[in-house]
Image (cartoon, rainbow, N blue to C red):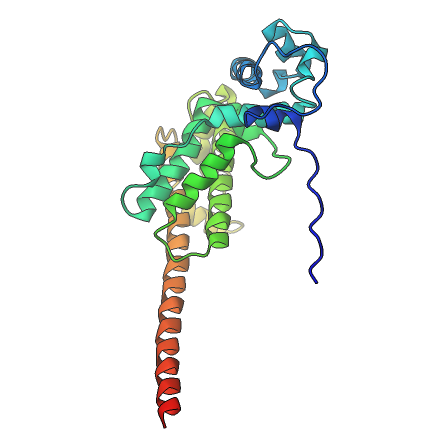
Length: 273
């Protein structure tokens, strides 16, 4: 006899609001704002002043509300951040992930993540406190699965591939911005990046760092296309890895079909004897 699944805890108020559900057990005055208006105000504040500027008090002030009234919509800054991320990413481009070969689809999905980060650079700094559960977050997951639909990967392998690729794009964007190799980056970090190759030549001792000395000649200063070049290279690495996994899965399926067919034929022949 199977054990009964534990009862789900009540859905947080902000999720009920984001999914268009009427919050249960709500008391007090009827809200004068929507959860999307609150999230949009927080996004605008983060775009203007950075993620650290976002607080319950600051967002309430943006909307002309009291801080306490904001708690009728979200219980914490973590919940507010989840709303912000959902609005910052927006709806995925379904047309881009449903046309052409799967590699082109998955690349479009990954570049969509990069585009969202470029529109809202602070979004790459957000630490997630749970799996995706908001409407747009699930939309991005669904669109990624659609992009991988033509492959032979299992559903879990598809989800794992999306998790790894999303993490790569977000981390690469964050690192590139910190190093100053993209528009809007820290000017001081950008200067260090522009002179990196020459600084390496000054410091690298071939006897101490022989491999690095051999590679140093390929470091280029002031590479205006660094972000695009390295992003494309990284995405290609992931696509090649998924491709190899897909081919192995396809070969295994074909082998199973051949073996099953042969076994089925032997069983049928033996039964007729």
